[in-house]
Amino acid sequence: MQMGWGKRVRLGWAALGVMLCCLASQVWAASDVKDMRVWRAPDNTRLVFDLSGPVKANVFTLTSPNRIVIDVSGAKLATKLNEARLKGTPITGLRSAQRSADELRVVLDVSQQVTPKSFTLAPNQQYGNRLVVDLFDQGADLSSDIPATPTPGKPSAPVTPVQPKMTVPVGPSGKRDIIVVIDPGHGGEDPGAIAKGGGLYEKNITLAIGRKLQAQINSMKGFKAELTRTGDYYIPLRKRTEIARKKGADLFVSIHADAAPNRTASGVSVFALSQRGATSETARWLADTENSSDLIGGVGSALDNKDQMLAGVLLDLSMTSTMSSSLDVGQKVLTNVGQQTKLLHNRVEQAAFVVLKSPDIPSILIETGFISNPNESIKLASAAHQELLARQIRSGISTYFQKSPPPGTYLAWLRDQKAQQVATGSR
Image (cartoon, rainbow, N blue to C red; front, side, top):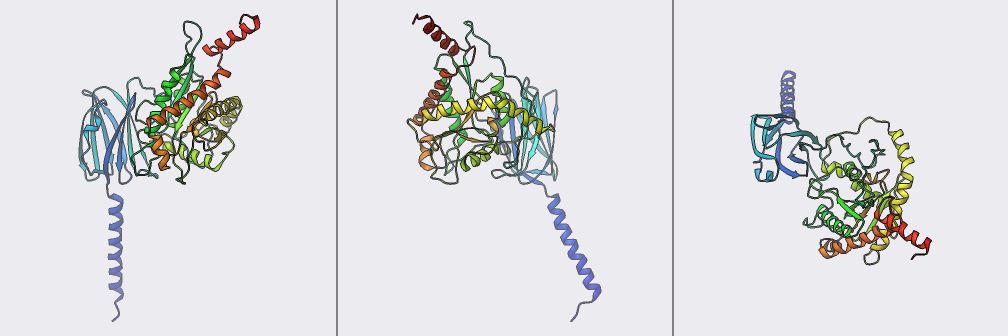
């Protein structure tokens, strides 16, 4: 029996109504707030809310008493937020309320005035949607807005004008220390590479090696080593080079322990910056991996609208001698490490690592091994192997600066004294 025309129309409208209702429920369905993680840095506290979908947030402060209010549109709380994670931060209390079916309010009680900044992050290979709320302590440096790292594969040019390096105060004898800034890769929200089984994170290995290298360097007269991060928190890539500049670095050393698609890959490698492509496929792959750290660690600001072509020309002019020094110190480190440790390459590789883009500071990145290799990950977790790597890296750095000490340093004075003794025959 054939269906009448009118009945077919009515059924069609009914089906359309059901479809529209389904679409509307998808559009208006609130995203779940699944978890809250907390990271404490020296001058700020970061809260990361893990979400099942996108949201919009409005963050503002209230006083008497000091509070931070986080209004999240399109969200509902799917779990109890763990207040125990707030220990050691300025946050003294937390409460939340569902103001409507799809609007959540979170209120933070704080013991001191803080400056909030917030942004949302789209899903990436490691995390889903996230809302990030940064609370900066009073006196925190908010003068520079750190640009987000471009997606790997897109050409990038420096967009931040080069600030003059801080002048390192000269000691009472008029002979300053050589400043080496050590950068333990990843941290906080960004664990870096993870060993098979999930028990070993690159961020912890790099910090352990960085601390040992700092102690090794500080044991040498005429040297002073500083760390970009001293705990488990994330620092944006360009901020790391800013820290080095503010500390008056003569050398920047970034420490990593990456993973590779081939789990048999092993050995130490040293990298310097390349502006004209990577020297090998491995170098290119590693650079792309490391340059994506800001997407994982969470940087919310966008690149500003500066003349990237002009910035690129200025960088080319200022970086020639710096890159030459980077290759030189990198080769000294590689040679010393290779005396007792397996190398991946016998020469310094080059790739476009964002963290190495300091026009006026010689900079190297050391891959201390591959955490993806089961045998090498065991060694990287060993305190004895970490100490060996630190000692070898220190020897390479010392060899370089003995030959090329910066003017005004103790080592430069020592070299001049020896040259004068030779010249006058008083040796």
